[in-house]
Each structure stands twice: as structure tokens, then as C-alpha cells.
Amino acid sequence: SQQGEEDPQALSIQEGENATMNCSYKTSINNLQWYRQNSGRGLVHLILIRSNEREKHSGRLRVTLDTSKKSSSLLITASRAADTASYFCATLDDYRLSFGAGTTVTVRA
Amino acid sequence: DAGVIQSPRHEVTEMGQEVTLRCKPISGHNSLFWYRQTMMRGLELLIYFNNNVPIDDSGMPEDRFSAKMPNASFSTLKIQPSEPRDSAVYFCASSQTGQGASQPQHFGDGTRLSIL
Image (cartoon, rainbow over the protein chains, first blue to last red):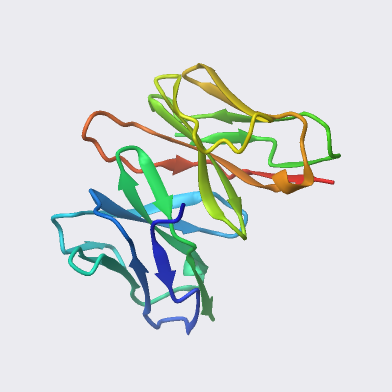
């Protein structure tokens, strides 16, 4: 079953702009992970944020986590055409990753 | 590091045929996962192996599906007999997990399965 729900479902931006997507989840978590999936490829792990962390950065990525609201956001700054992909949040319960439906991001040149 | 290797990348077969999907996890990883991805249901965990032992197969749809991991470097997912509703992209993922550890999963590029 899907634990996380991403919003929006789709996002189209101009190269150089920032892209923000949100994820809401239902139950308590140990950590929350974000993955990227390029068309026709497997998922690639981007970043992991633990339940006791509020914000984390990795290159052009910034992730926030609000456990009181059971929500997380992923910000991609200065987007590039290569960032065109689907982005998924996933919550981890023991070994089980539960993925949301994803946000499809299109970066226009 | 070669990553997780899946074969075949694409499979088209007729209803009723047996289908075998293969996966080679990353060397040194002790956990292996099979997922199915469809537009309607998203990503679903089918089965989880730890140290070659099936730990959780609650996601396997029905008895037509079976999975094996005879050694640390190879796993198969078999569908027999196949049905059109089995059409999906099947992913294998591996990770290094231990008690209390939260390691990211590494995915293969999937097998796109079409059952006619």
C-alpha cells in the first residue's frame, strides 16, 4: 500500500527555476527517502532524512521533514533539463519501503 | 560497481507461458527486493530476501508467482502461467541492511513485461 502521497502529480518549469514537491505520509516513520526515476530506468536514491532531522541538503537538493504534520518537501534549485524525471518519496518501516505515486517533473530548456 | 543487473530488459510473451525474470544484486549486499510498478498501483513490494532467505512474501499476488535466491549473487522471479494483468515493469533492488541500519536501496533498470 502507498504510504506517501506526493503533490503535485506533475510539474513543468523552465530551466534555471526551482522545483518544489511535497510528500505526506500516514504513520510514524524512522526515516523518509527521496528517489528519482528517469524514463525507462530504475529508481535512484537521492537523499535520506531521519525522523530526528528537520532539514538536509545534498548539492542542489534540499529536503525538509515535519513529523508533526507528517510531511516532507523536496526542493531542487536551479533546475536543469537533466532533472526531468519522476520523484518519489518513500517511508521506511523496518525493511519495507512504501512509495508514493510520485511527482513528474519536466524541465523545459 | 556494476549496479543491480536485471535481465531481460523487455519480455513479450503470450498468456499462459512461463516467464522468468533474473537479477544479480550488488556484490556484498545482503538484502534483495522484487517490486512491480504499474500506473494503477504504483510500486509494490513483492518479496524481500535477507541473506538469501525469503523474509516477507506477503506482496506476491498469488501462487502463480514464485521467487528464489539460490545464492547471494542471483535471484529469479517466475510467473507460471502468465496472464495479461501481470503486464508491468518488474524491478529488483538490493541493499546492505543490518539491525537498526537504514541503507538506501539500489535498483536495477527493470524488466518491462508484456503478456498478450
